[in-house]
Length: 320
Image 1: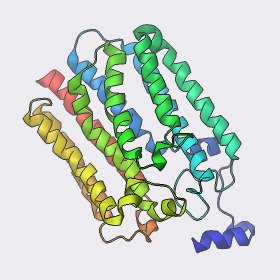
Image 2: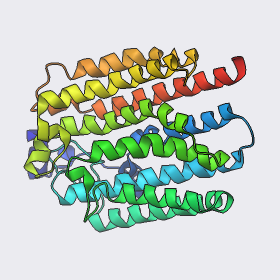
Image 3: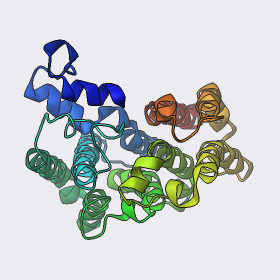
Image 4: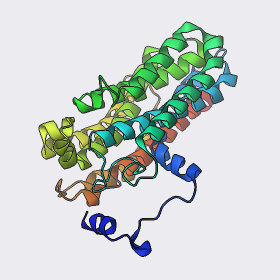
């Protein structure tokens, strides 16, 4: 924190933070690509469930589904950065966001316009899906854009009133998994919604890792998250609940024959989960630097967990 302040007060070239060399690199930094497993892995799981279900599926739509989701997620990240910057959540002395606005790499107006372009691209790549599957996909797309924009966007900004965890779980768990399945097959499945729960918990863990790290800054900005409303002890417990809950849910789904025994392959990712949970032990909320990468590490866990779960479904399909 003091180093950043010193750098801003002493404008010598050697002390200036390294900046991306091109506009393209800046825009790439702005989308926070490390978080993309949060949307692409549930999409992959939905596709694997379509494969397991059998019957006819419009597989040519899969690239459009994935790319549309990617642009939707990127747009949500960018708009979130704009609103967090305006609310004082992201500043030169904080660790959150892409850092594009606090570092002055783009203006808020440029970032907002970029976010709107990303949302427009999400709609554009969603058109073939709407044409093939009809109005239900349109409504799902509208739900995704509204959910992404109003995560921080006014007048709702549900992130700022301690509702982020709930809505992120619903949007990046059941909504993406069942939505992908429907887009490919035209069928909604309650079992798919159940199978999406572990990934929904892990994606919520990515968000909560941010909130745990940012408790002090969010309080200073008068932003309410579950982490800062209920305090440090609760926040650490919630993170562990989300991670452990993902594994317990898989076990329960196997016990009740919703998933096959092959799904226990997800436990190969347990060492990463344990490493992440151990990271928060003994860490005080003032020591934000010690958990600065917890969100990215939780995204890596989500990636590995989701890939293993998807592989287990392929094995179930072809090996029985």
